[in-house]
Length: 123
Image 1 (tube, rainbow, N blue to C red):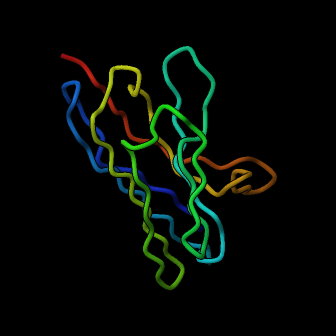
Image 2: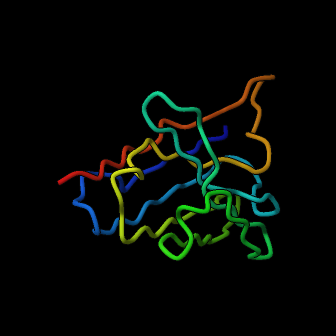
Image 3: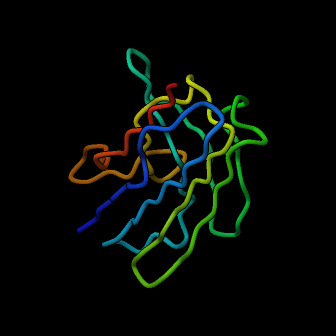
């Protein structure tokens, strides 16, 4: 059974750093592009960064250029995705999710999302 389990969020001061992790398991996802998405309060979910099976990276959010990096580790039926965030800004505050890209993974005809991990940047 597919699971996306995100972790690593927290409260951090502006200028601080966090490293998010996502364990995607239960399906052979090693050939999928997988990315980080975020949803800020009152806003729609948006793409942040995506990495494909060959390590090619797509940046969806200009605001994170030079501050966020994405990486992945493939294993049998498990992909671990990382998001290293630095120089964090209050506008980075959001719930961060991982999922396949460009379309969310579907389970029983519905888009599947994990619980996400909350990142709050505040002084």
